[in-house]
Length: 230
Image (cartoon, rainbow, N blue to C red; front, side, top):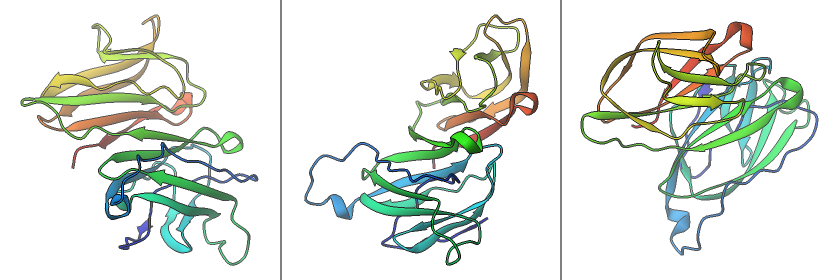
């Protein structure tokens, strides 16, 4: 995946392919005469298991090219405000019209994860506001359920009390604080009778924050671990 950064354009939005246009806006920032001078950090995640690779153009300039399932960009610096975003099937700009036209508003001094989720015929955006700091000696972890056909799940230490309970598709937990260290975690059905994904030796470092996404179809469930702190 090739990622281009440039000073005065925004590179934050989704990889999606569908036949209709989408208009999307995050929460509008409070009026601020210096808002245009502020910047946000935005990370893009392709979490749709059957969507093809896409190119993302912002204000007519290529921002992300050839993004595939499970690709996640580094944080991209985004000027606060609203930008026009166009999504093309990879390599089709100039040959076909954009399959998605979107509008995104981001607030300065905030950090976001923008994910394309669901299956190809039901693609949608999920926008998360990230926390980027943790208390001394601890980490923060949250979990997102982005597997479109997986049941509701619990996540916690193997054989122990869940840290996150009854997460359904599209749910994202609040952050939980954990002492730094290594954990043998498990994703189980809500009744706890079936383990659907094992996460042995999951390490979290002091002062860091993490988002763990359960992605792919239920029969191939897998984790995508993102470090939210820089």
